[in-house]
Image 1: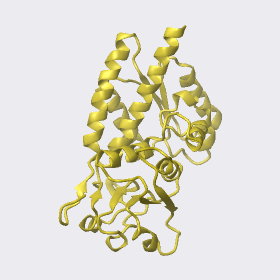
Image 2 (image 1 turned 135 degrees about the vertical axis):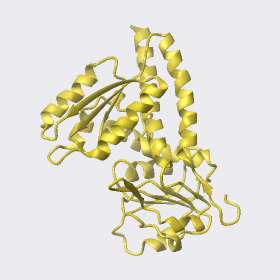
Image 3 (image 1 turned 90 degrees about the horizontal axis):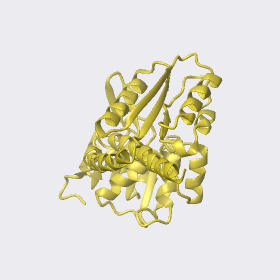
Image 4 (image 1 turned 30 degrees about the vertical axis):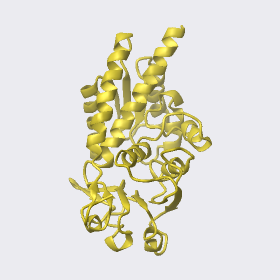
Length: 294
């Protein structure tokens, strides 16, 4: 916990660097057996934020030794053409992980796109089959941002088991899978989880009782200082891009009362990318086993 009024800053980059260092060693071991992990990404359209995210992910691939494959499709792409691009990566034995950058342009079905990714190549952990594995407590690639948030909380020794966790935001990429993950009967989870959204009246009445708050609503400044119990852990997982500025769901003054808090930049983001790389490397390890069998 914090000392005085200074919270512990949960720097995601610090832990992400440690994960990348571990993955580098694992990749070297895989390469000794003739396997280099490969990440395939698909971007539809020319959304600037999505383009930045894709570039950043491939930069990390290069840094740690993962091969990059990329398909950039026009915004006018049909669902059929998108599935053809996905299936091309499904069939490519050198691609271990596939990521379709979300959100897709209007007119394209996110669910169908995610479902068409082979579950064993689902680098983002959002294929409906893998989400089903999460629901039933069976092993599979975990959604990157929720898994990264959990790892960050554990790294900074935030008590979770039996604690009151409030997640603001019920989206597919963060809120819903994170609620499932943190409520699981595991040594690093096992919390009492409440999921809220920005339309719930009097958010403060819930938040003021929370030991851990995870804001993933994409509503700038939604969580205010007076809503937070002194000493609580606060994770800013929802951001809104305004030009070149990233706006957090967490008001800046929250750090005056929080025990732990993520920075506006460099908190959850680096962890999401690190978990994406980890899912890809773990998939490559399974390929190694299959190659040995055959």
